[in-house]
Image (cartoon, rainbow, N blue to C red; front, side, top):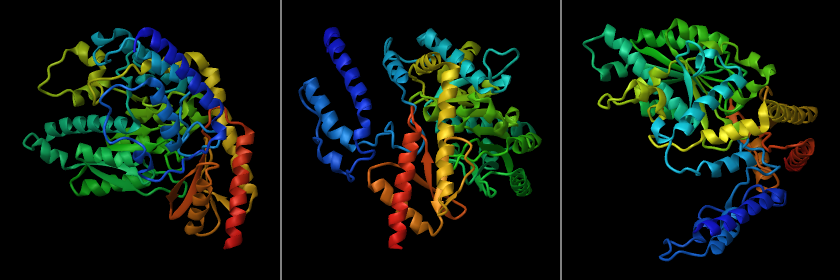
Length: 475
């Protein structure tokens, strides 16, 4: 493909994407395909000779699109928002402008410097403590872009593990690292994402999953009891995860309780704020994260609620040297400059894309006020859905609706609620997901569309109540 053909096909592609989004409401939210249906439409082998671009695009429309879930559909209320705004899409194109990898500073100075700058911008917008800022007086911390929240959890757990073992070596010089590692214990609540358990498996540390209270929050009494119980067994608490907006129901653990406790026991406190962390751009939500100053690290995923498409998980750590000390192999000599500025030493992959560019473009295009309006609109619409569901006496609201997620269920059995959600999703008229907690099966309604309006909410309310009418008539 030469430059002129790229120009023509690029313009056609932009038109296709724009028209697709403009008419997306006319499509089903979810496909009707069964496992293997898409695979049957594709050849077993790649072509020997190159094919025409138009033929490839035709297959996109006839095979790929009908087999896809449309996350940007106005009736998509599942998971969390897909932060795929048009400025972010265009930034993704621009990120390929210079090509190459953003591994060391010398591989792309502008990309490295921009990443440091936008992570500080973002942290300031969220009101995070100064210790997480790269360019704050006397700060040892800083931010970095990782592939996913799961990766952020893993690298922080590995940093905490490395720090804990170094401390233990001073007190137990005759014990091998393997023996010391076998004594380390990490902690999370039953509300924590499954990636936390996966991180513990990869890091080869024990993980304790603790019960939550009636609001799905981890309390300090439960955590302290676990610390003491394990210490009596000769084990060593070293890492704890707190949720700020859990995946299941957006529960927020009380950091003002957990923080001082972790400080007392010298346990690394990591905050998973993947979805709800973006709400901190609005000051009215910051009371929920009181105690964040005790955290050693925090993760926010703008792909979930900040109009920046994945992959782009943001992570801040209070001491960046703890990160690089844990991740740079002992046999690999690097300079102080490299540890400070080469982001290949701040995570698992050595090769990284120019992801800072899309953060930069989106933050500049919408500005702080634009992002605040977006967040507040979603929260207001979630409250609207909650109020309508509450007025229907057949339903219960399961969670505290602080953000853009409402968890609800029909009063009745779990089987009844499973049937309701299954019928709703099978219709293809909207899409929601399920979760469970405290023995209850419930439906998650997330406000997802970027420019969602009240009419979208009323559409969902009517469908939910109409399907509930049909189901209850049969029962």
